[in-house]
Image (cartoon, rainbow, N blue to C red):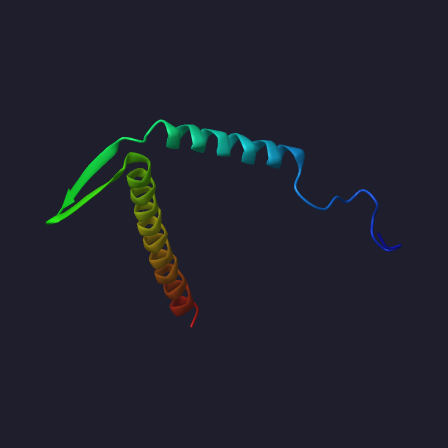
Length: 87
C-alpha cells in the first residue's frame, strides 16, 4: 500500500462473493450429474441427440441471447428517439 491509499480498502473478492460462487458451482454440478440421460431434440427436420444437461444449457443460452438482443434493440431505439427529440 502507498501512503495516499486508505488502509481500510480491500482488494479482491469478498467472502460472501466466494461463498455465492461456490454454492452456485455446487448446484450446477448437482444439476449436471442428475441429468445424464440422453434427450432427443427435433426441430424443423433437425434431429439432435445429446445429454439433457447440455440441451438445457444450449436452450438457456439461446433464450439469454434472444433476450439480450431484444433488450439491446429496444435500448438503441429508445436512445435514437431521445436523441431525435433533443435535436
